[in-house]
Length: 252
Image (cartoon, rainbow, N blue to C red; front, side, top):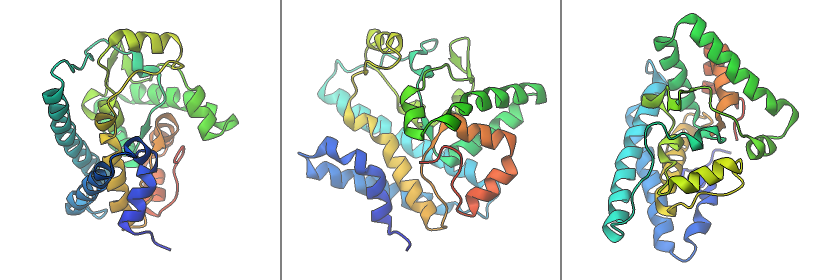
């Protein structure tokens, strides 16, 4: 049976709602913001050329607007709140991350347009090698034990910065020393976060997944490396599977 928009959104935000258990008004705000993302995605359809890139770009734009608005509110209440992230700081780039399918296709198209055939093949092989860890582990185990540099990290800088996933945009810190300690512990030590800022990615995930559900397309997030390995070795086949409603590699 087809799920309603609220059901799709609530299933994705289920891990977020407990953070705001004492503030039901915030839970309603998060659902409403996700519904707004869903509505704002309505100008894009699977019939359009470059559909996944258009949807990914729409998600990035909505995320940036929401993120900056919430960050401004947080800083108005706490002027000392400053983001410590900067070029060359890559402590978080060895962590497991998730992406939406549309983000994966968007990155794949970007790489095909900006890399030589040899560079593309080398990156695809690196993604395949990292994704191979999922063959002998559950997705939960793979994500929990994941710790290795992203193949798109070059000289401590993101080589796909302009098309980096929403999660990477949302992964911020106010304390570089905390990031270093987390890195040295292989992510066993968590970096303190502001919950209201860090859930902004989830609103994009939920809203666009609800929108895609209307086309019977699975918009749930995927483990980054398994998805990129699949996309970069068989873009057309993977895209056809996605549009037909099939789950993709590493999809949750």
